[in-house]
Amino acid sequence: MDNVLRRDFKVSTVDGVNIAIREVRPAAPPASARTPIVLLHGTRIPGASEYDLPVPNGSFAADLARRGHVCFIPDARGYGGSDRPEAMSRPPEESRPLARSIEITRDVDAAVDALRAATGAERVALMGWGVGATILVMYASLWPEKVSHIILYNAIYGGGTEFPRYRNATLEDPDRPGRFNVARYGGYAYNKLDMLLHKWDESIPIDDKDAWRDPAVAKAFEQALIDGDPTSRTRDPVTFRSPNGMLEDSFYIGRGQKLVHACQVQCRVLIIRPELDYFSRPEDVAALKEDLVNAEEVQVWEPANTTHYLILDRPERGRTAALDTVSGFIG
Image 1 (tube, rainbow, N blue to C red):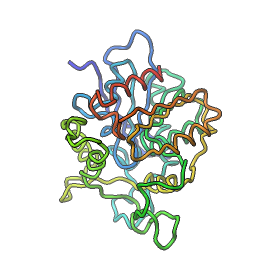
Image 2: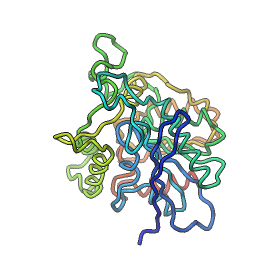
Image 3: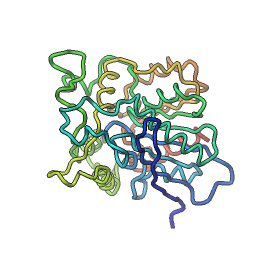
């Protein structure tokens, strides 16, 4: 029998958006209180697909809960079970990129306040993946009194002007160099199921991908993408929708523009960059370290021979070490 409890519910943001939250908590309270944590997803996919897959070693949240941490996993506006902007019911070209990072700080705040109320904690920890990590730098700057720790996992920050993934890419407007290609991308995207799995495969440095990543985790990941969009099965082939706001933000950050300055962060900070990550750059880590001048503490963990999907890879490929590191850091 699993010693973890789950609950799905919604909270309302200050601007009236209903945000879906997956709660994952220990079935029995730990002997001593552990820090509760909000787990924020990245650019294209909802929270459960990254943090709570229903297979062994597929739920980082469940394993944190088994160590005594209450976890809240929100879906940002436009993702998963949360409200989608009305524009997502119209063709993408009829709107600008939806759900920008600064807007999503409102969704994080609703989740943080719900977690504080549920646990009685004055301050909570937060972990963000990719652009989700950048959003946490914004959030911790806006509400330092609510945040004890932030974990920046695969973060991009604006540490360099050259982003290998964006070189010669279609993200740039050909008629206005240096600007995001709004005309091509519009408000949201239709994503193929194999898009992220292909990137995952490319990042694994051995031919036998199953030796590095459990096939059951990969299958559950794909299913979570389907389940995260109620319209996914209405299209052939199946695709899932995601707002393009974080994608536009990643474009500008990748070109060296800091959408927030980390000198405003006051809490404890852990930066995690797997050695083989294709998204976060060493320059981003260096810039964060340079700018986090007012943080209570800054730790950097760059585990060797690990991928962007470290927390979903097999335990011996760095996942267990990630659990130990994150749980040990937030206490």
